[in-house]
Amino acid sequence: MSQLRIEHISKWFGRQQVLHDISFTFQPGQVNMIIGPSGCGKTVLLKCIVGLITPEAGRVFFGNVDFLQANPESRRMILQNLGMLFQSSALFDSMTVEENVAFPLRVFTQQSESEIRERVAYCLERVGLAGTQEKYPAQISGGMKRRVGLARAIALNPKYLFCDEPNSGLDPLTARRIDELIQELTEEFETTTVVVTHDLKSVVDMGQRILFLYEGRSEWQGDKTDMLRDPHALPANLRAFLEASGLMRDW
Ligand SMILES: Nc1ncnc2c1ncn2[C@@H]1O[C@H](COP(=O)(O)OP(=O)(O)OP(=O)(O)O)[C@@H](O)[C@H]1O
Ligand SMILES: [Mg+2]
Image (tube, rainbow, N blue to C red):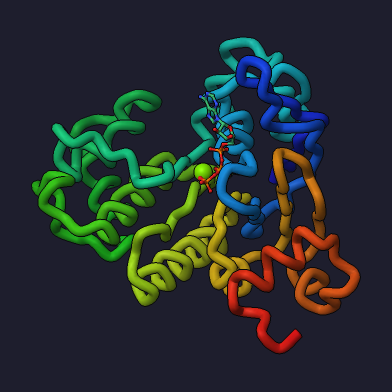
């Protein structure tokens, strides 16, 4: 599997620098997590990686290909291998569940209507939503919308799966189910998965490789087991972030 790597990413909005020289190597076939407090730059970094925002400096490598410099053909190849679940699902409200999940298949493949219908049914079944094809986003719950978003993200059988706050706004049980689903999909399809979250429970449950951002800077990176093993070795901001979660009362 091709490794995903970012090098020296910096991003400004006007005079505000929101990302400062961030480098990180994502572990293939695992759940990688970008964590940090609200406003630290997690979503902007994720959007830089998938090409929705162009950073002023830095490189994003999918294998040996520099995504930002790639020619249109290579860019399209990479985009075909990306699945993205946006913060708050971002479904098309005027389309049914079936049309939402079919969307990337129509844009990126030449599949026939019956092939598309079959693939959509498979993806919906995979996320536990078999038979919901005809519903509109307004007719389903928040947790179901996330699942539809995930079904759409895996429609193209991606090598890379990006999820921005996949369980925010959901009750704790539904949140855990979404986490489990992301973990299952990662293992089953061997995707390199990147999850942005400020939910420490998600990190403890499914995180493997961790990037901690603080005010747009990479303050710590490493394996979850190292992060949880010795809190005293961590930078103060990460420690405070972990302690504020309430999961670390024993420290
Ligand atoms: N399009 C934009 N124009 C100007 N500033 C922006 C834009 N998008 C994000 N920012 C700023 O960049 C900073 C980082 O935002 P970002 O959305 O990445 O935070 P986040 O870590 O994802 O926060 P949250 O956990 O609340 O989602 C914030 O100060 C935000 O105001
Ligand atoms: Mg965000």
